[in-house]
Image (cartoon, rainbow, N blue to C red; front, side, top):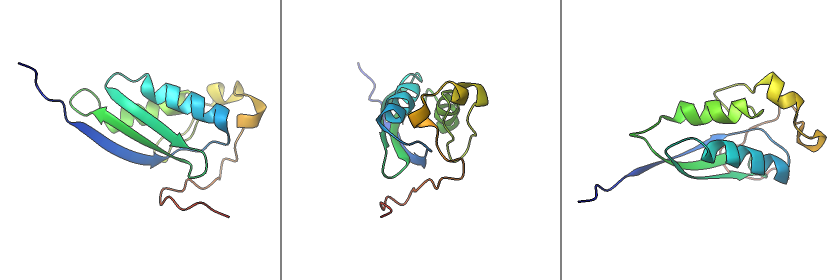
Length: 105
């Protein structure tokens, strides 16, 4: 008898610049046990994550992304990890994290 897993879905802001940021951010989120899928949007500076909330809570995902060098709306980046990001990934620390989803022109 298989028990159906209900995935929780969250979206939150994550600072970053480019496709390399996208790879690192998504890899960090997807590495958290219980995460089913994570997609970060370069233009919106936000990530959509589906996860099993019986295994982990959202803050674990924030912490994993911050540990990889990126600010989330709840957790500041690891300064050490940020130091080692490629130069194209060095983002503005006051960059707006646009959770509403509108692209800024």
